[in-house]
Length: 476
Ligand code: GLN
Image 1 (cartoon, rainbow, N blue to C red):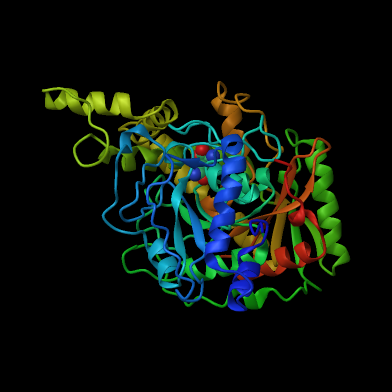
Image 2 (image 1 turned 180 degrees about the horizontal axis):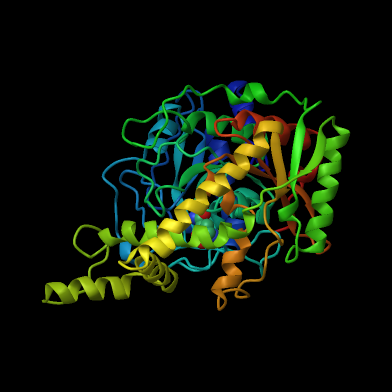
């Protein structure tokens, strides 16, 4: 029997009542992969460990496997950020999120999910291992940078998955692939063991088939970690308790700056319909303003590249991964970086180094930090009067493979609706809310106040319970 279409919570129920064995679930996952993975290419490198442990008594998660993005450290299992420069890197420890998953009885799926190199990108085309294909249309990108995780979940090659989100890398691929993706509040999930892209923006989060699975997975990975100095010491609620199905009286803000030129008209129509749905379910919606929205992309690409240029300085051929072969030390540093980094990584190192350099620091980096505060204040103001903000996740549905590779600016604009959330440090979720005429999924983004993931789950779950979008499957 094929169990791969079921959600994790449905599988957990079946495991508990002994209607299915863990082995049967894993077997059907592999059978599914055999069929669709040659088309989708969600995973990289191939299986490393043959010994998948079938321990269905392993705590709350009963041994269910979780698919993990290639930038999250897994002890004894390659973690290469889909970059040549990390070739052969076996982390000596597990990231905190992996530790928490294991403590709760999850298994780590023995293949890692594809991603843009170091999470730089919006399409997964910047992976050293080649592109992942969108399960809804194999000619299209799955989004990025967590495109492998999202495509694996959407094509039922994964039960659920972890991604990371610096400027939209969980939500945008979730939207392109028709699945659920959540970026938690900054500081909610430990970044210990997440290979850093931009430390003040990065958060790990779930990519799942439905909102309940996202609530379960978020509850497990959240929580204080003394090993991450930006981790917040605040108790974690049981998020499944927010799945009440009731949004009566909730006040939703619709930012007018998000409905402007550049937005696909079909996407616009789908989002408007979704907002109407939320209204019929008892919420009220009103236009609001986030006046500094137009600065989000430039501010992000200064701060994110500045932090990335600094974080990537450690990859020099000495401590990790790839090392160019030469006798001269300085030459070795140079060659390793020249041969090891892909084009987008180099572009970001150059941009970020420039923004931080003497003479330009004040004009670019410092100014970007100031505007970041203004963007954050825009949100604070709206959340004084509104429970959540609803927007599209992306201005378009999935685009064709190759279409934006030669035009980095156009690629950067794919994140125009997701980036402000990271700059402000607030949580946001993307859920499936409809399709374009040519059959590509559209995602609805819901944002809330810091530490109010519960609001996201409540609204997202209510919408999901009253629509069928999350049940539709790509024909592969
Ligand atoms: N697409 C954005 C970028 O290229 C965001 C990536 C991310 O969230 N990791 O930086």
